[in-house]
Image (cartoon, rainbow, N blue to C red; front, side, top):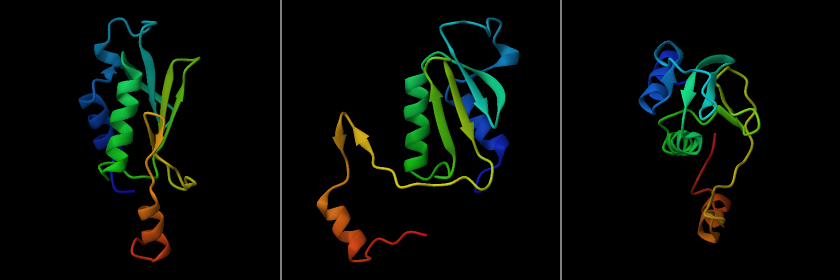
Length: 117
């Protein structure tokens, strides 16, 4: 995929994920644990904000769309997977309970003005 794990790790730290080696209170119950490919890399105190930032990065092609992002609210965990072979499915973006796709978008897809790989 288009990004090295070290680049993604740095992006996550830039988005205020606190690395375990710098978090003296890493078992803080006010933070969500952040995992990258199954490895606990740090904590984040505003998980909704982190998820929004990651999703925005995917939507603007700053991150590959193939990356999988999962939030387990009960366990207070955010899991990001970048391994090859991830299955993709069509997704509709909803913002403030409003579906973002419009008839004009569907028309562009049907007319093949917009093509997908």
